[in-house]
Image (cartoon, rainbow over all chains, first blue to last red; front, side):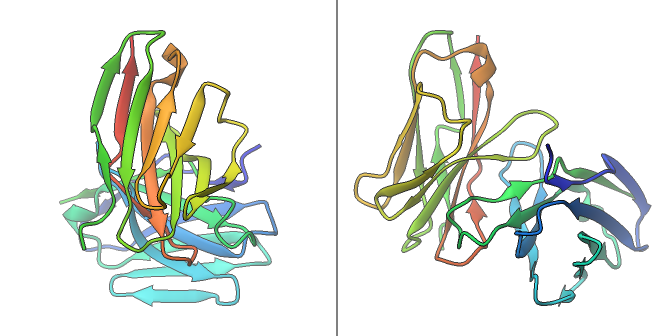
Length: 114
Length: 112
């Protein structure tokens, strides 16, 4: 049973436009959410995170929105750049203070077209 | 800041052989995690250390897997009697106490 779901395996966006990646979760004990970016043959790179007490967090071109009632979060990238082409993973952490590891979705492959 | 490093980056072995991977976390990070990632999946949690103590193990970590962090710095993950199903990317991550984990480049294991 997948507790973190990324329902879009891939997403194609034109350079300069907004990229919106979505993530849903089922476990109400999750209290911290993270987005990672991954290039082939490399480890995931941390992008941005959000605590469950917030509904928005912004860092440069990246903004994460959290809707707790819908158990849904999204990552907005504006404007999209060619270097943003990668696989993006949504991850969640429970109330175990880090002892429980992160639970990841299957990822969304973002392709930025020129 | 040298980041998390892992060695080797690639390992090819024959079924039944033992393999050992090493992870060096970010300096002064007291938490260290191992994950496994297979094609088309996100990383899956295997085990967690706080300093030298192994505090959590996933049910994915069968008896053939063992991990150590002897002095609370680097960690090793050993797989005994490897099987073809063990072929995956093995990722190590560390954190300084918050929920954000920083990942290494991974070790790609291929079992023939």
